Image 1: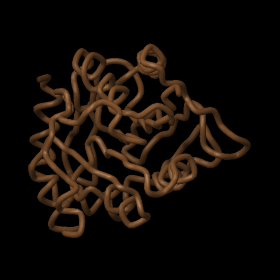
Image 2: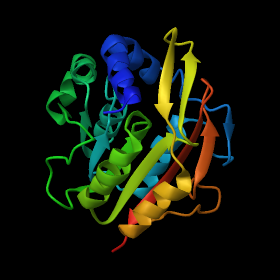
Image 3: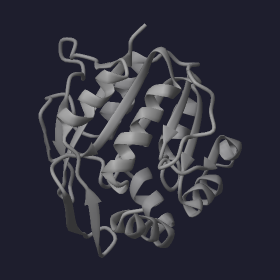
Length: 230
């Protein structure tokens, strides 16, 4: 476990309730810059995934975060979605805020293989999570697991902090410094291609392709949708 992973888990244990508040109120979820004109914030990604993946589909939010905002959102929309997170306090906060999904969120460490059979899900989401995992583990375990879990034709939504090395920034919404692992988009996309996933291109003005944005902290991110070959 890297120092940034240790720091990250300690952060979430301490700030789980505040993180859920920031997440559910979309305080850091409106982007200040974006490479795609239709990508203004998290709600645009939520909407686009629903266009790509029909309701009723089985999904996994890998690293659902404190409060499991997106698990609750998609469950309300009729998706058969589960959520996992490595930090017990994050799952406890999800069950406190949304008791309706208490049996859908569990503790699991993305640095280890997940306890689901191959081809379990129609879609997997992993948003701003691998930034807390050391690259040797994320690239050899975490991301390959997403490919293993997807059904043929399944969709991965992957978001990560973009760049090289690590970055530490003061987060005013929590009043503390935070450290993140940065990832190169080409390396991540190449790894997925080796496992049969290709980036879903843009369709007209709809979100697609490899997209970049800057959040209010500010930190640079990459996000895309990728489909597993039939």
